Image 1: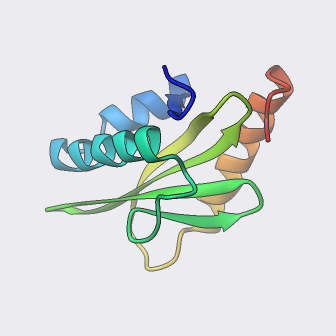
Image 2: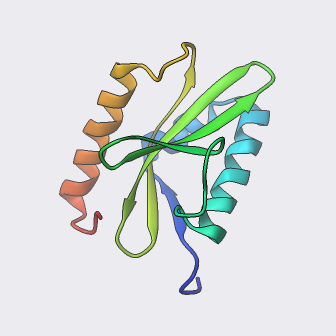
Image 3: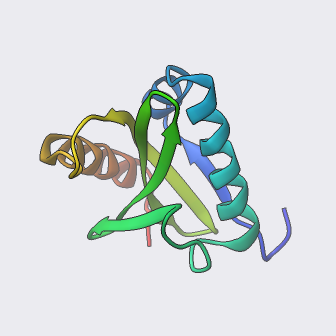
Length: 116
């Protein structure tokens, strides 16, 4: 990996959630991951990613059957860690999904002190 590139990593829970999505949402998610890795999070903008709160950001996935979100945060070493992936059924990202992602973020950062 060059110095200009980023790595997007998934927690084991988020990886399982991602691969449970319909194939078209997975394909769009992988395109957004490629964009984040090559351009970096500073260059990625809406409609692909959006800041949620604090250190938490979302990848915005769409497919024939609806929309999904992949929630992530930045770590030192040019890493973005995806902690929650879910199908979104309401206009606003549900508070319980954000709370779960924040809990997972806390768990990840307690294991790894390289969080930005």
